[in-house]
Image (cartoon, rainbow, N blue to C red; front, side, top):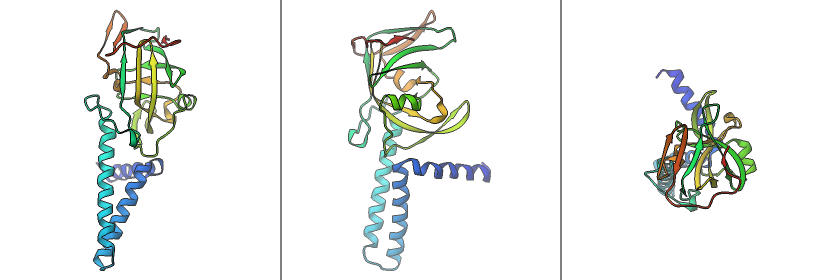
Length: 226
């Protein structure tokens, strides 16, 4: 990695700071730790307390970041509601989705009660929603969620991680599901592997995607085939 790439990486991180309360808290904790070290060096009272508090704060931030990242893998079912990280639940009965003429699997779902069209993308790690869907479904950004940088067809974009209270389609109900959103995503909503991997199974047979969750759910009214 050359100097220009390092500088760009640093600039990207700095650019994300105003978008995340957690990153702002990290910067404040680092500065407090530096100030505490200076105070200790000059024998100023409370220096050790300031430095120790900063260390504890950084440790707590690190744990929270690890918890957030681990939620993207269904093997780690971590929940921390008080920190805005509810349990992610996907349940329901078998749902069949035929292949559309454009070569994709599309479905109509309900997001927090709002009717939304989704494309299923098995190559996408995370479920993604547009800013328009986010507004209609009443989904708000959380102060403590760490933004992500994602590669898209239009280049690398900064994306916010949000939580969908409930997403329903066919016999499938997902609750507390993490999703990403960014202006650069356009209006397409995508169901990714963080939902599919929580199903009992999923497969494609004769140009039909078959989704089999763990627990049967009543069919969502107005949802299903696109």
